[in-house]
Image (cartoon, rainbow, N blue to C red):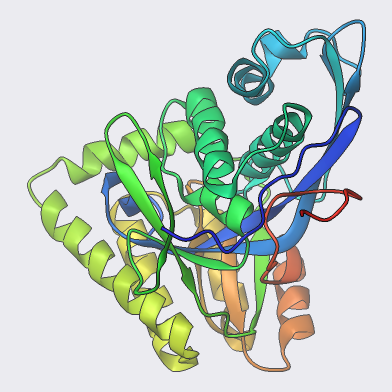
Length: 327
């Protein structure tokens, strides 16, 4: 196993860390059941500052441990028996939008606490971030936290490059590999309909348990593997075709939404393809804009009632802010 990314170095409190958001291009939901997924870290970020305090709090709320499951899991898994801390978090990632807000918080929080505990390696950070998010949600895969820890384009359970790391869950393991960055812009657009990952994942699990479930899962697998190869080769027509097919499958398992379908239709004149991204049943879409049509695409999506962003791959995963370089 290789680790091309630097570890999180030791750093005393106070310490600040940040992590990018993410966008799933192929394989959401199916990855929970062992199929491949292609995910990209995007240049929207969450930043966390951790400092000493007399009372543990999050954004000045001393009751956050009871209210926020991600904060509670982070403390339990990365700061057990630690002294009280004050945590402040600020984010440009829309919440409950399918763009990795919870994964980015988990990874930035775990990186900051890991630094205060003496530092930690990138595979360990990927595992810990996954455990925080899985503990808070109860279900899910390692794809989201892998993206925000690793940065760039990453294949989970697919791809041909060297293994970066493997994340272990109670019932499954996910192997992570780097995918070449085609240097494309994307447009992500939040529908304004909040989504909850846990219920959507459970509903898809029930759908895939039906008699035709294995056939659907096999097609998710094929589309994701072909999508990983197409993105790595910079083949836009193939990527667009596979995005459309992936959206058909997501409709079939019941996680699309009328608002998402309206945004996909609004994107069509300025995009090569568009699909939902993340858990679905609300949340966001991702579109591959026609070259030079990014601003036009954003305008069309805004007129359709969405909150759109032009994004590119963020090559750097979770990291300390203003920390000295690793030795």
